[in-house]
Image (cartoon, rainbow, N blue to C red; front, top):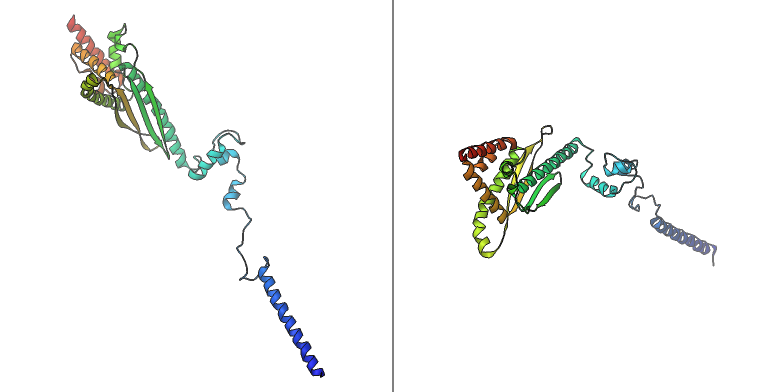
Length: 286
């Protein structure tokens, strides 16, 4: 074997070994996660805090829950309040949200007043039924429902029936607008009740009739218009009982007492009208 032939064999082995080493190194680079080539790079995952996380990192429980007062530590309900704040934003973040909340508080106060006045009307007239009022605040609707039972003895059968009847008849809301709404809804129910009178006698039923309306208001400071939905439900028998009592009073006084109470601007004015009518009727009797 010549020396030239042996040299060729050795050179070929070196070339093959070098090629194999190159292929191995190339595959190793493809499988290595720290590869720096553009083609072999995977998705880059950032471990840095996002802008929102950075903003919330230093917040206390009170701030993250959107509470305006109270301690900085955890208070029961902060988790739920925090979720609501993330979805809708905190009421303390913007002036608009503050205005909405202020309007909601004012509405709630007004609803309480109206419910109280409506209960007085029901008790004064011996009604048996329920009062429902609702109003909307931002994303939420708040509703109040009160059930009023008729007294065992009607208010106008008290010992001081002469003065009590006038006050009970004029018992409306302190606000003229609300008073007219109450009077209008109840007057409609009384008219409907007469249509059910025959069925009550034949079938022995006492249907509950409902009439609804809207009372509109405007905030004096915050320029927001809003309304309260009012729904009055009264049993037919108690409507007919009060209607019969009013007719008796009208015959004695010679004046439309219901119209006088409804058209008045306030309860005090209505009382004056009704009392004057009663005095006139008493003078005629004398």
